[in-house]
Length: 289
Image (cartoon, rainbow, N blue to C red; front, side, top):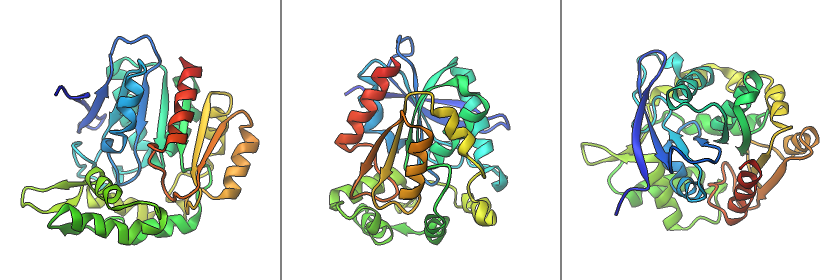
């Protein structure tokens, strides 16, 4: 069976070889879509959503950010920071000739989307912000610190899935065994020694932990407000420890025309494979064209 995507690469401004998946036709007449993953994740997080969008006629670009998946690791752990990731994405857009696009950002990818909207609003045709906002709940940051960069490896995918359930079970109470195995295969990789381990550079924890209360960029409200005049979908996990219900209310006040979907039994973060989320994404893309 022919693959749904092609595997390609680009070079970061500081010389790293970075990887991305490309779905759909490069010469399509619909607005391109760029999917940006979360802190410890990679392009496989969108392996359900990306082909779905491509079938609607959009070109879909899904990068592995530096230090994740098939992208190179950096010798300088300080480069594992949102401004550097944005520079990497801008280099990718330049290589691919993409001037204007729809951004779908989960968690860290949503932070990147808001910041890009702040300094280059003309680039963003529309956006999906998944379980992140201009203010981040400190409880969620502390939860991330309990597992970020801890390493570990597992003999089988079932062992890996059970470990994920132990750490993240409260965020996905409705997940069954197959869901946890799917999450394991999206976030981990089979190593050359036959063990299964997380598919990211453990050194990404260093700048995150060194940032104290500023583990996310400060004052993201201007970036979010730059998105408010555009087609915008905000997705929240109903039991999220990252995007609070109060912050969502303030976001709705500042972006009254935005669509909102709350996934009741999800924490951080919804997978974007939920039927109600898919329908909302389809509606947003139809409005952009």
